[in-house]
Length: 275
Image (tube, rainbow, N blue to C red; front, top):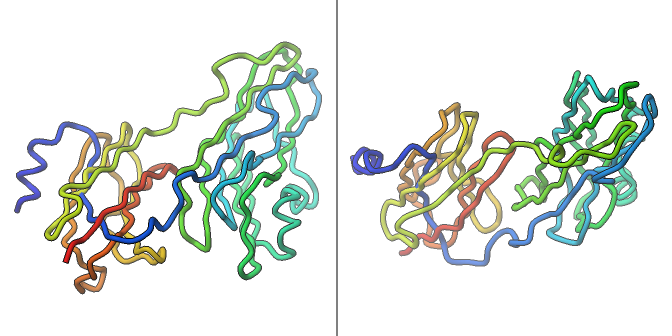
């Protein structure tokens, strides 16, 4: 197949080929901007303090998010609020009286899912999404509280891009520089030819190994094709799309959104199928 021929010329990176369609983009380009606030602070040894996951400016509409937050357990101890619903931010709680809230606490990582369950209720920011309380160690040192992963949703559809900023804490000393930003995978997603009236080649690239998923959605945000899903090494890969959906039916000409997800990070590209 042509796929083998293309694989031979792709350097170790991660690649997938996919098709585009003609229609307005399903998601605005500005995405969601969020941060752990305050991004820098100094606390006393042994003191408790809070950080807020905050949508810092107006952006794309969303009605839910999933965040993975991590820290150094030698420097910080997470202190859950009781009841856990107190951790939900005022912006989320004020928008809708009913939410799906799931909180998973670990030794050094918390996973948060919070989704509005009221029909046709969406947020744009700014506002407080979540509260996190920590206790500092008794030893003066610097520590980072990192947004390892942050993804927003609009009625079940990924909102991209997401711009996230982590936080640094100085315990009994000024906060250190260069601690707060997590190491996140760098992704690449391209398509050729685009637009296309035949098979479309998607090139995916990732600088680290991990679980990945490549999907296609139409302009209404409906999932039409699952192209690949599983564990892959770092490097490049090419995936061919024949313009069909998961049922094997030919899709109409138009604009589609290809989305690559790895380790909580997302890269998207519009592709167009010609008649």
